[in-house]
Amino acid sequence: MLRLGPVSLAAVSLRTMSSQVTRKLEGRVAIVTASTEGIGYAIADRLARDGAKVMVSSRKQANVDKAVESLQKQHGTESVSGVICHVGKDEDRKRLIKETLERFGMLHILVSNAAVNPTFGPTLETPESAWDKIFDINIKSAAFLVKEAYPHLKKTGGNVIFVSSIGGFTPLNLLGPYSISKTALFGLTKVLADELAPDNIRVNCLAPGIIKTKFSSALWQNEAAAAEFVNQIPIKRLGEPDDCSGAVSFLSSDDAKYMTGETIVVSGGMKSRL
Image (cartoon, rainbow, N blue to C red):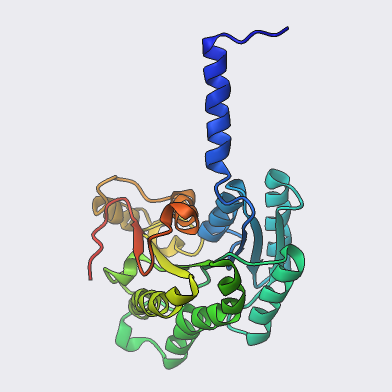
């Protein structure tokens, strides 16, 4: 008979506790938009690691296929699926919800991560078409996606997490309209938190700082610009996508069951007050 000494028993106990902690989203189903790279991919990966079934999405089939293949290798074919979704298109939003329900049967978590920024420059020189695109995708589409998900989140007592930005608190240089749209997400979070609380749906927000992704490359690929940002960060480094994922997992879990209408800032200490 195999006998385990105190150290071995402690190790087994720790492994068991660790397994329980990392599966805190077991049995739940999540949608993450714009999740084939960057912050969205890191969030999808973390939610799957913590036990959720995850539907990833983006505008291009090739990107969806690549992300699904990578995530399925890590978490299993039963845990991850994907679908094309341009969040600015009503038919795509509907299909995203429909295919999630067909694949996984229910919906508990909606992470609205999709955003655009088609222009850089002074705010008053931003063309009207860019303003329209920014607010159409970053705000209006986020609200309408929640509208599509609402009947299903109501059944499960679900969660909505909007991904905003530190720029919503402190406007980023030459990104005025984008920063304004991210401030508006704080307002959308507050409004929907109040309206959906009677249905046991929580609505919270994540505000990342300067995270090294393809989307934000214009802010950090230039060494001088990156150094200037690092000077504003007490932790003295730029963020990585995975730095954001744990906060979203927390907001999606019962650990945050008494939180709604709040914004968690993940910025390395960059100033974050309106």
